[in-house]
Amino acid sequence: MIDTPFALPAHGVDVAVQVWLPEAEPSGVVVVAHGMGEHARRYRRLAEALTADGWAVYAPDHRGHGRTASGPGDLGDLGPEGWDGLVADLAQLVEVAAKRHEGLAIVLLGHSMGSFAAQQYVLDHSDRLAALVLTGTTALDQVAGALDPTQPADLSAFNAPFEPARTESDWLSRDEAEVDLYVADPLCGFGIDGPATVSLIAAAPRLGDQAAIDAVRDGLPIYLASGREDPLALGGMFVDMVADRYRSAGADVTEVLYEGARHELFNETNRDEVTAALLDWLRPLRR
Image (tube, rainbow, N blue to C red; front, side, top):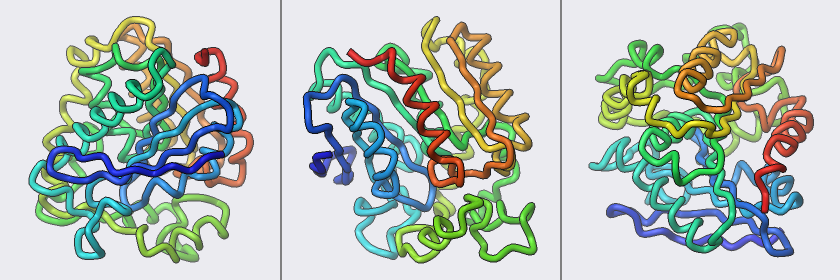
C-alpha cells in the first residue's frame, strides 16, 4: 500500500487528505468521511483491506479535525463556513479523486458524522457516485432535537446505555484495546463546538425530507451497515428508517445490522466479518 497524503485548498481551509493507493493501478476509488471527534488515519486498517482489493482510498481530516485543525484549540471548530463548509470540502475532494482516476467508480463511504455529510452530499450529487456506503449512521432529523444548540455536542452522552462502563467511550466498540487507543489519541474524543452544532442542526431537516431524497438517482447502490447496539441506531430502527427513505426514492439498498456490535464497526470484535462483507458488496463496482 502506497501512502501519499496531500493538502486540499478548500473554502478557506487547507484540508489534510490521507491517500492510500494499491501497488498496482487502482480499479476503483473509495472516499472515506470519518466521524466526529476522530481523524482519517484511524481508517488505515480498512484502507489496507481496500487497497489489497484494488481500491484507491481518499480520506480527509474534516475541518476542525485531525491534521486540518490548526492545533488543540481548533478541534471541533468547523469555522465560519460551518457544517455546509464541511460538506462542500467533501464534494470538492470527490471531484479531485474523480479527475485523478478518470473513468473509475467513485464510492463515498461515510461513518457517523461523516455519514451525515454523505447523506447531504448525495441529495445534490448522486450522479457523481457509483455507490454510497453509510456506517454508524442514523436518521439525523430524528435525533437532532436532542442536541442543545447552546452547547458543544457531547459524545460521552452515547455511553449511557453501557453504564457502569470502563471508560466514557465504551459505546464505540466491544474491543477494549480499540477503545483504549481512541481514549489515548489526542486527536479523538471531542465534540463539535456550539456554532458548529447549530449549523449541523440546521441541516438535519433536509436529510429527512422525502422530496429531497427523491432526487437521488434511481438505482444508486446504497449499503448501510450498523451495530444493533450502536446508540445512534436505536436498536436498528433509525437505520431502517434511512434505508426505507432511500428505497422509496428508487435506490438499490442493502442493509446489514450486526447483532451485539456497537458504533465503530471497523474497530469492532467482528471487524474482519464486517470488512469482508463490504468488500464483497463493492467488488462488482470495480473496473
